[in-house]
Image (cartoon, rainbow, N blue to C red; front, side, top):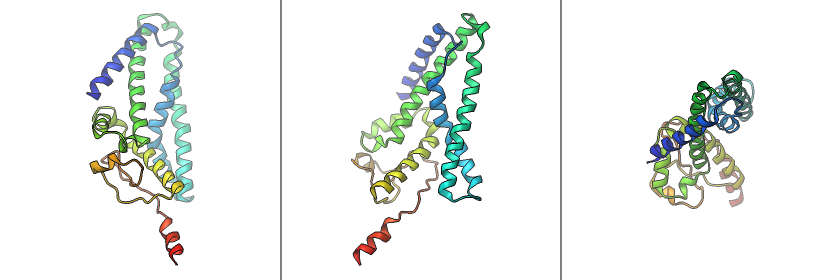
Length: 209
């Protein structure tokens, strides 16, 4: 059902884009979302290279910043070139490219919806059927590793801030009914989850003494 809804949105926005044309279109939303989705791939690569020279945490932060900047520049250049062809304005080519841009916008908007659903841990509060729809579609299969990258980062920050017990990784259906994030629930099945060590046990032992 979700895949059908995605196709409907993409086609509708494609038709809107066809009528509007693509010349002088800014692609603001597209740049932001594509940057967020593509950054993890470069950030992980950069971290692997930088970790030999600086601490792991610093390498992770530097890799993320470097990834954001480079991806945003590349995406901006590519999309900017498409919108700066004044001789195409109000021509058949302009409307054809407008349809493509509209379809892309539909894809981006639905990808952002799934992305926000995943990184907000909405799956542990909403019914499992909703999560199945969010996962079982052709967009999620292309962005699930990016979602997992941000999801693990957010969970690590949450755990540090709230001193939460991590528990064991679990994908059982019971986790979806929890009202708080007490154990990490992976989003992507083929992603290797790496969480930083929890410093809390030592503090708890000291308190007991």
